[in-house]
Length: 157
Image (cartoon, rainbow, N blue to C red; front, side, top):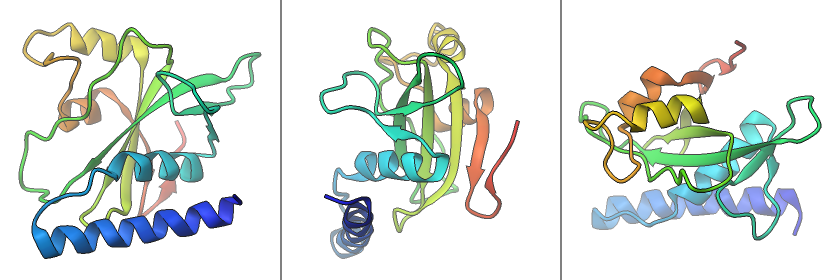
């Protein structure tokens, strides 16, 4: 299947997920796949090979081995509501960094953050934050680095 066909399918999945939520008040469990697709497209990552465990994409850092990127996605339906959490960070798996793709209620990305594994491990050792390897979205934003915004595109630094 071509990249163009996958992009068309993801666009349709976005539309269906948003329409379904508006019609039923329930969410379809598809935001993770949309987030992975967005991270790959917007950050210039490569998809992980089929069967890869613990990471979703690869990033060439100019070294010998590409970095293993774990992608997390979170749909923010109400920006005034706090306490949203990202999915579990599997510390027993092989990954180097995590990117968090924040999606709006139309399942469109509006911000992407990155945090290195060592920073995330340190944050997870804080008993107040650690709930089965999970962090709040706001904590990830505070310890991570903003990579991309809808308004400005890719950020450098």
